Length: 272
Ligand SMILES: C[S@@+](CC[C@H](N)C(=O)[O-])C[C@H]1O[C@@H](n2cnc3c(N)ncnc32)[C@H](O)[C@@H]1O
Image (cartoon, rainbow, N blue to C red; front, side, top):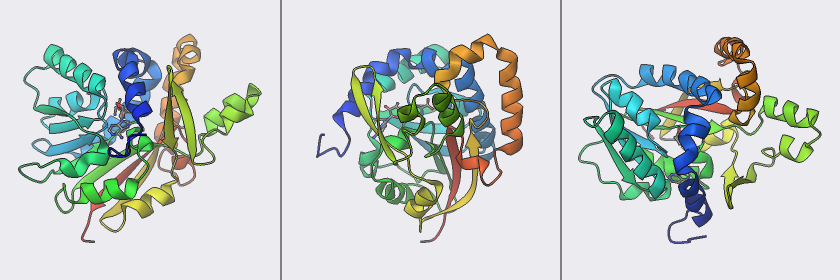
């Protein structure tokens, strides 16, 4: 581990190695689109046109490009040089005038960001923050970067994913079924091992206090399964529409919201 950076070297190497394939594997997958669509519905309510926001762990820039289309300007950061390169290439090809600034910056180094003015909000999608060991520090750094009352949206992998448990138990793979349960697991990404943290809703709420108050939480990918089940969903595309509808109905219910593949937490910056 690189102690100075506070981020695992393997994590950066893993995402560097994934960058060129990430959009094919996840962004453009049916499951990826379904889960992201559910997040976008909330994003578009939270970040009004004209606002200026900070995105953490932006990957290949899919969300930044989406927000830019809705007149939201974005400073989008990621620790992986290849992800940032891919994001910049996508912007050049898809929307060269988009109000997006891509920055190579690990979340652990957020305090090095020196914006001219505070952000109107912040956002992290699809588990980038599960790779960060100390979310309390991230919350403190974010508190110094956003305006009072700013929305901060965080989409994390959950500790307990029911569809994952059922799938792997049915396939006799108990290790995979319960891989998240201890709170930390090693995920293999190509040749690299990524340390992934699975904090509970209560733990994230505690780590974001006192500068952030949890306003809402919803499940993302409850009936819609994790993306590794894409081959099965492709065989039965109509099933996905039904699963999306189910998710829409249950995503805010107390128990269901934390047993999906991801949970989307909406915080508000408040006086500490
Ligand atoms: C699963 S991808 C999600 C990417 C993007 N947010 C999306 O919605 O498609 C996780 C991203 O987090 C980034 N990441 C992982 N650890 C990080 C860290 N400590 N600091 C900044 N970025 C990190 C990875 O490089 C990768 O781009």
